[in-house]
Image (cartoon, rainbow over all chains, first blue to last red; front, side, top):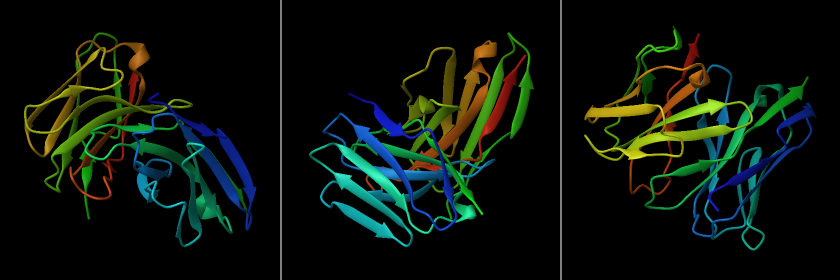
Length: 112
Length: 114
């Protein structure tokens, strides 16, 4: 119930292409779904986040799509760039709770 | 900008040694967290603290303890290091009650236990 399942484990995309990373959760009490981006040698940093009252959130080239009934959410990176090469973690938490549950991570490599 | 610093980027210790990992945040955040990061397993919560001297076990607390004597500082202690504790350790902090509930991470400490 506490798990967040993330796929794929790794992803190779051509420059200019669309990168898609998927996550699924079980606990319907989760109400905050952030994505974190981690570059080698750095800690994860918040990239974009969504709450379940909306189905989509867009910030620049990054879009979260959220399907509440299916308990799934995904990150789309449009016009992927080599600088987007990083590890991406989806996560879920409950407002007022202390714990954030992270997915296993996706290593994205964008070929120039 | 929130800054979370960790005492060491790389650490090599021997089996059985006592290991201290320290984390300091400069944003007066109430919540602080210790995670370990392993390939294919993501980030797993070891311990967290929501106030000075308060601590709660996370998902994998065995073999670890923590200390929070000051609001800005959260220490992770490996009482007797073992090879299976070789990992990347990440500290994070957050402010409770905020809309974004964002966690701010330090750069990590890569610990190798020989």
